[in-house]
Image 1 (cartoon, rainbow, N blue to C red):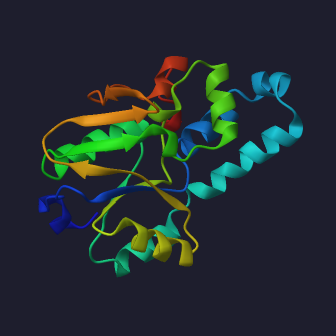
Image 2: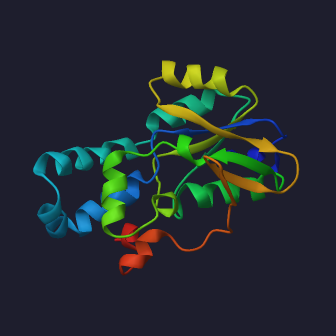
Amino acid sequence: MKETESKRQIPQSWELLVTKWIALSGTSVLLREKEEELEQRFSRDFLRLAGNLKEYENIQKEQDFIKREKEAIFYPLGEGGIFSGLWKMAEEYGKIGMDIDVRKIPIRQETVEITELYNLNPYLLHSQGSFLVAAPHGNALLRRLKEAGIEACIIGETTRGPARRLYNGEHIRYLDRPGKDELEKIGRALWQS
C-alpha cells in the first residue's frame, strides 16, 4: 500500500471487489498441518487440487497491476480473512459503510469442505494472496483485472453512514469488529509456523 493511500477516503457508491479466492493461505496451512487427518477424509485427487491453491498466494501479478492503477484502492487480505479486511479497510479509509453480498465472495469448494471439517468460518480464515479493492467503476476495473490475468469479482459497494451490512439472500447481519483468525481455533497461529 502506498504511503499516500492511507490518507485517502473512499466515497460512497464505490464498488468493492475481491481478487482470486478468500482463505487460500488458511487452507494451505490446514493442508500442511492436518495432512494425515485430511488423507483419511478426502480423496487424493481432492487433496492434490487443494494443494495447488498455494500457488495462488503469489501476488506478483497484482503488485504489477497496482503500480499502473491510479483510481482504485487495493487492500491486501491476511489474518482474520475477508471479514477482518472489510472492517479494517472501512476504518482506515474514512469509517465508511458497506453493503456486501456474502454469496458473491469468491471461495473455492476445497476451502469450504476443509473448513467445514474443522468447524471453521472461511470468512474469518487467513486470506493472504487476495486483495480487497475499492473502485469508482468496478466493472471497468474488473475487465482490466481479467485482461491482466487476475481473477476478481464484485462483492458489494460502499455506502453512506457507518453501517457495514452483510447480505445472504434475504438475511441481513452486520459486520463485527475483527477477532482472532480462525486458525487459532485449532491450536495456535499456524500461519506463523
